[in-house]
Image 1 (cartoon, rainbow, N blue to C red):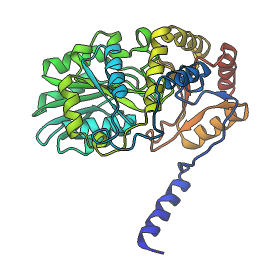
Image 2: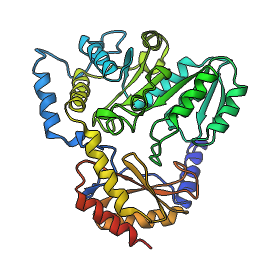
Image 3: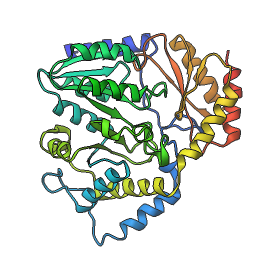
Image 4: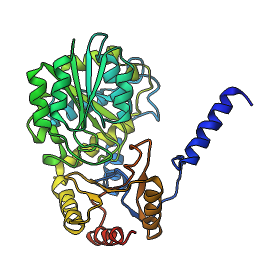
Length: 373
């Protein structure tokens, strides 16, 4: 066995030993409290029909784009959709990437240069961390949602300064003090970047996100909107100035050196946005969130949030796994989130609320949660 194979075997054995080995599963359970399909768009027959109807307007379209957007993969409809989305979010411009991961890595790795400074919340997504690591910039983190510590780091920052946060944090579902963070960025001439992956469709009027809900569009350097959560599609867009879009086309490697999304994917994205415009789903999902809060109220091991993500906390991998197994045995699709995705000792079950979850299903889930020992 080669040394590389020995290394792989050892690392896998360590994961098995501490109970954190990851495995793929294609199985599903009757009641979904796990997926990011908050508005039910991914399973929507109405959206599917809208997509199919829109595709009929194209006399010919290919199964694949055939190349990167800088070569043969661009399409007038893609650029039209980018401007349509930018207008919806009150942004100058936008550039679509193939995934949220691609968008975050492409944006951060290209924009921050040697001598610049990146300051990020300690709980930002792995894609934002990876994008930051690809730069030669100075990098600092601040304690989660701690604006005092953020200001301390801003005082020692050099060059162009980029502050990176999420509007809804994916593991806890909590929301940052974004107005205060924006004020600090303005005070220290820093550029604020906000990942709105889990806020799109859920927060703000017609699901426009937290930045617009707080009227902070003009104080944010860039926003990343991800389509694979509430929109039920795939891909992401970086929103910002016209110059930022031009810059990313020229310098974001995850945009330049990848095959473009096929046109039917772009059609799906635009149709999903049109559904956001037609119905204010924010009001509908808010009812589910409020119902959950009302019935879980007072249960000490839970954390409630304004977002569709709720958490049930444990202090060990074994306790979290045993609890999610009990809930799964009752037909509830919930999953334990374990170290190293979250810190050791802060394992949790992540509960995602959806429009397709009936009120009865939510109430029954909470009853089972309260029965966990």
